[in-house]
Length: 110
Image: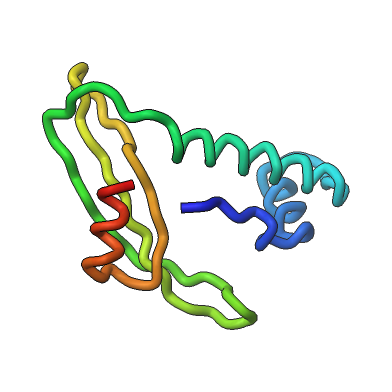
């Protein structure tokens, strides 16, 4: 999965920040914020997975997204495990067009 903050408008980020109680943001501030978020998300998605897990949950849901000027449904799948300390840990997240077998297979191999 690749995080794509550039698909979010400057105005929508500014509106979100205002809704959270902070002041408005300039276009350059939004760009810097999105770059930082992208860096952190990609670091999380590409981190090495180490240790053992007692339990593993795989689940999917569908969300509406804007793509090519249209609103479409996309599958979001997530893998959550319980580590050796008994804590839940998100192992991975991915989006795709559907829950097709190839999507799950690619996700589990990544």
